[in-house]
Image (cartoon, helix red, strand yellow):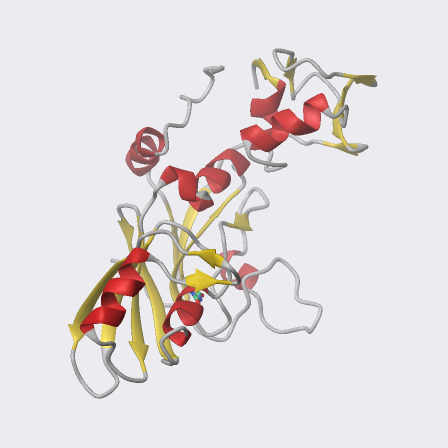
Length: 247
Ligand code: URA
C-alpha cells in the first residue's frame, strides 16, 4: 500500500464512507502510531503505520476481491446468524481474503449479491448518491392501477421518508403479475414495503442486475469474480480513484 489520505484508508478498509471517515478523524477517533490525528489532510501508510479507529487496529487487505453471487432463497445476508440459519457466507467459501456482502437481500429474495473486501467500493455501490441502478423482478398479489404505478415511480413514504424516484414496468400481466423495479437506493425491505403501501404482497423477488452486472452465467448458489475490465467500468461509473492514486 502507498501513502494515502487517512480518510481514504478508512473508507477502503470498510470503516465508513469517506464523508463519515472525515467526521471520525475530526472527532479525534483516529490514531496513527499512537497519536490522535484530527487534521483532514493527514496521510499514512496502512502497511507501515498502526492506524486505529476507536481503539481498533485496521488491517490492510492484501488483494482487493470482488465477487458476484447468485443468491438462492433460504439464506440470510449476514456473516453470522445468531439463530443458526444458513448464511450467504457458505456460498463464497475458499476466498484468499475475507469478503463481506455489499448491502443485503432478504432471506427469501434471490439473485445478484456482490461481495468484497474493498469498503470504499461497498460504500459507493450502496449509497443512493452514486445513483447506481439495481434492477429487480417481482411477483405480487394483484396489479397496480395506473395512478398507483405513477405514485410508486414518484416515491412512496416508508417510515416517514419518501423513497427516491424508481422505475416500474409491468412485464407479465396476469392475476398475480410480475413487475420490473429499478431502484437507486436499498432501504430495508424496500420493495416489499413499497408494494404493501398499495396493499400488495410480494410473492417472489429476484435482483437481476446491479449497474451493468447481471446474472448471466451464474447458476443459483454459484459465484464468480468480477473481471478487471468490469472493475475498470465500475471505477469510472462510481467515480472511484484509480488504485494507487490519492484523490
Ligand atoms: N427489497 C426487499 O423488500 N427485499 C430485498 O431483499 C431487496 C429489496
